[in-house]
Length: 281
Image (cartoon, rainbow, N blue to C red; front, top):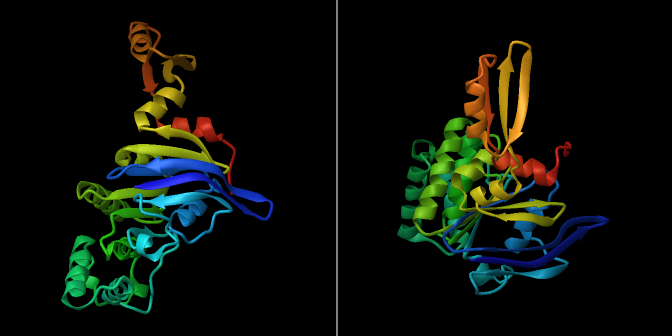
């Protein structure tokens, strides 16, 4: 559904994307993970035709480049920076974006009502967006990306700054889009989101692809060992092991152990192993 081939993009002396290649299959939820400055947003920009790569190519649905308006119509985008008009109501925002894609009349009004109901914004549909909470704006941002019913959705940090209820609502929306056969690509800093939602995950840093696969495959390859922590009367002892169950059984039989805990590797372990633990600004 989306093919990125040897993409390069440089801003001044900074290589934002450095030879990135990956394929997103039709109907999957695909996560793009990386620390700040890893090149995720630039990659999304090139994938939608907003940013011109220095070299390399983007192919959408086997039909061509997103710089072609007809190809771009097959893409829906919810950018990290909210793309909404605060002085318009939710209804007016969706009508405006719908008309940009050639919708009109009863079909557009039906679509607006459907999306406002789906995002649970119908009771506030006639209110100006400037009075919306952060979570409401994120949901409307998603609705605007879907107004023309595209088969490919690109979501850049779709849950940034929202409350748990809105975050869960966006999770459910992504699952429903997948159930409808849509392809979803999203960037996130939240490992739990990728673990819960993604069929496959790509980890990128410094504009390069570091790893790609299912969450289980990435944890197996890059997650490291499990850590068993046992509490004795003199303090805690940490034991790294490939056999946490066997180690746990042994420790539980020890009279000196008052408490034990097992921490298995997860996607966060993979992320830190591949990208490091240094702070990014």
